[in-house]
Length: 310
Length: 77
Image (tube, rainbow over all chains, first blue to last red; front, side, top):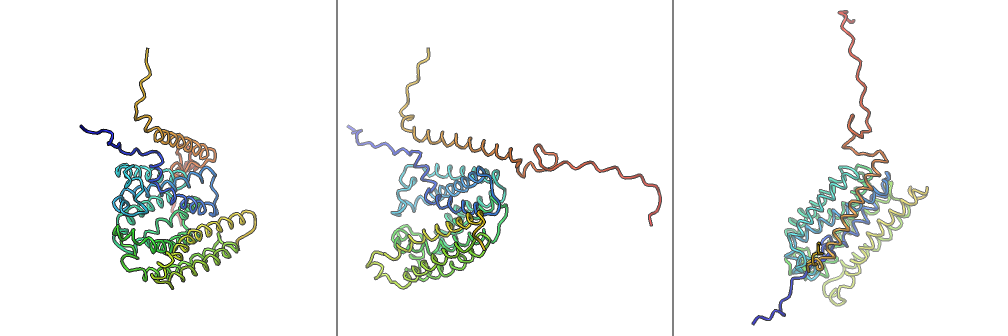
């Protein structure tokens, strides 16, 4: 006789599981940087239009996250950090993730173009394509430089916000892009240094796996040095000012100190204190980006009240 | 007399999902409505309609040019 009590029905996905497909934590960063890009622009949009623009930029980022989860379901199931995601957990079918990703991509691009302008919509479409196809499908599994080039996808939101307001690209938008683009490698490699095992198991050619941790430590310092001119340079543009520059100098000094400490260490030292420095630098890198964009927002408020700027 | 259909188990199981989708669609409709009101009241009907003669265009239709004067046969210097 069959014991039907042992039968376990498949888990049912709730609405929240579909929201998880959109990577809400990444979306929060996209919302913040896109909002800053839009608010610091010299052209001011109606609040409803601005809200719509930020919403659909975030939704576009979420759509690319769903496409990434559809494509990477096999390696997500192996890595500890990602195995609880809705597709590898069996809550959402891969086909559903693909359908949601494609549908939301189309809706977000069309709505952004209609609400603001065609260039903003086109840039969002390119960002989704870049993250889903260039990064997820191509670079991620083929080169240890995957996150350097793939980081461009995360760098576009403030530029799209700026373009949504002004209708064109400028030096300011370019430098906001470069700030995130150059920040991504040291931020991600600091994480990879203490999450190395995950990437090894999944066969993702992360720099720590292909070239070892010593080379990764060199790269963290090198990219941090390369990041500094872009971060400081933004302070001398029309959206910068003394407040931004002061904040940026302090943040870059601290980030450089952290990168230097990572560079000076070896594996014996890192394992002895359970990657204390690497974890601290990773956490600080999040604050670094948040405070840079926060300082730009402060400058924009000061500008509008007749203060700030050069 | 019509009897209410018995609630199927799947309706209870998928209540959160259906509610979420329903509320999202309502919010989307409200957003499109608000956006339309803002665009119409601001006269910002967008690039697509901004051609002379199009409904809602902000570009005036060019006045008809006067007919060219008939040739007199005189040779201009």
